[in-house]
Length: 302
Image 1 (tube, rainbow, N blue to C red):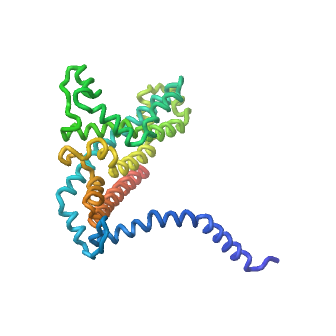
Image 2 (tube, rainbow, N blue to C red):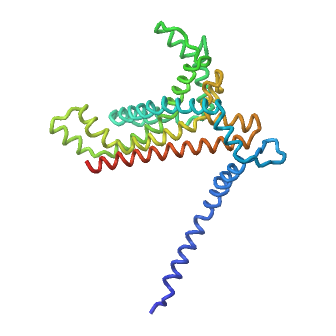
Image 3 (cartoon, one colour):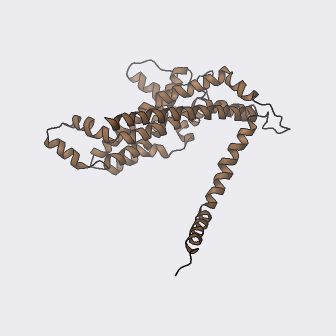
């Protein structure tokens, strides 16, 4: 007869083996995420400088300065405008590319390659391409405008044009990720649904709005959340294409943090701004999840 202590001993052995397997991950996780987060929070309450020296505790002075700095709120506004301007086209373009690839049987592999290829390019390459496209006088963008009889646009010297230029570059660069998610979701829709609706006389348009879009709703929700978070963290495109100009009209909040931390050497203040932004993102995420749960609850009761 097995001992009464065999089961607890076996459970402890399994737990110990599991901890041994996850220990390397936990170590790396703590070293590169938990520890930097804690150090950043501590720095936010000090006057820490990148050039070294003694750190002095300043309490909430950095946070108070951040909340009252008009430049920070302007940078946050740039980030919000970019998020609102880039998210809808990124979702729409990703869906359109997935629909085209899904319904184009010949050379489907080629369409997958063409649509996804820009996503694997580094941000520096994307910036170099679009800086040349937006160059006044000989850039491709102005050349196309001249072909249709329009006046050249100062893509990098006018605030609205610069923002539009970065949005277009971002859509061209990152829509491939959304395309893959939508393509996988389209391939998972049962073909029987379309066959049954065709027998009932449904047109392609009716099938799209009655079958395709409802079946893609979970994927669209996922893409929207991922895209919102990615857009709020934008930095590379603005820094490399416009440099935040003209006159800081395209400087996102992460570039504001970068400039104060690594140009002005105010690590303490930059850490405080980072946590203010982190709190705002958390509030936005919580609000989105709350709205989504209420909507799903209403749909469940309907």
